[in-house]
Length: 376
Image 1 (cartoon, rainbow, N blue to C red):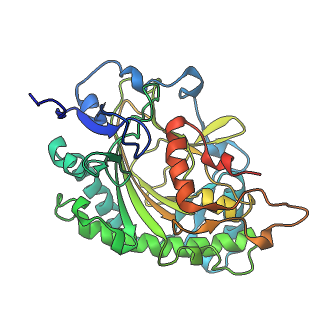
Image 2: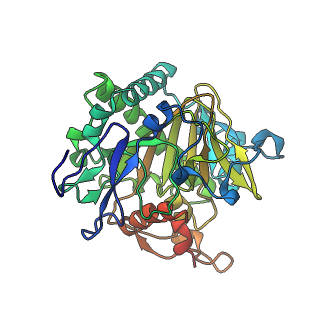
Image 3: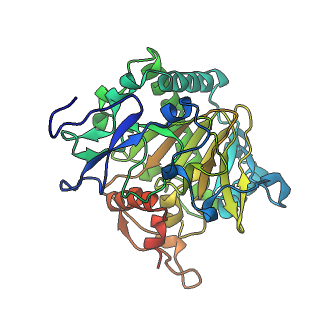
């Protein structure tokens, strides 16, 4: 039993902050660890995870069933100047904000290693994972970087059916090495090798994105990821769910990044179009790449940031690794001047990236899109 003012953690809970990220007058509370909830073998899910009727998963449609499905883009051919691949990239980012990437140059063995160490981390005992819990400052502030679950802003907020672990990769001077797991033993080495390859891939993709957006300088977007830009990796574990018809693995949202690269071991990712949700195809050995809000803003809406969600599954677990590439937090972001004209006026306000990311986290908890707040 703990004394007055102390908190006791049991095996089924992760502590998070109730309220805004750093308001000292707010209270601490417990949130369930979703893996532990799933392992308990319940027939129903706690009410905090049940989404409204409007947001509940419905029957989905494979994107192949529309006239212009989510494209599979061969990045090797694209970088060699293949016009048909450029056309697919343009269609993907104008219509969906997302595409499936093959020919990306990352060996299947490395993809497998990255997925394996991620799985092994989430299989660790809860006490070991809680060494990396998302609290800091003497348990006074919610942190995105580290292990935990949802950022909880109110008792009425619906929670996602997943557990998460986030780490900063760049700049290296901002890495919190004590949050990097020592188990499994190969975790750090595999993560370093995988993210090094992803960083090179992101640079190449952004050069191609600049071309299809009509920017004169093909490095316009890639150069925004300078030495002060921040990249981080999100590891997500979606346990089996007894009522996938009532919950979401991850609520609908868009990323605050310039670009996101996703590796996943199972289907479940969906994107909307014309009021219908479509499954993003799972292609062996492929990665999924989506444009983030910063990419939409800089291209003045010519290309779109992908709204996406993850549905739960009663039959199998889902593991994913997402690499997010964002600009310098102190950088002010606005539409590229050459993409603003009388025919296409400026559609977004100038904004400081750190302010936007702060708003993004809180908007995500509220079930809103922060990019709507900067539209003109």
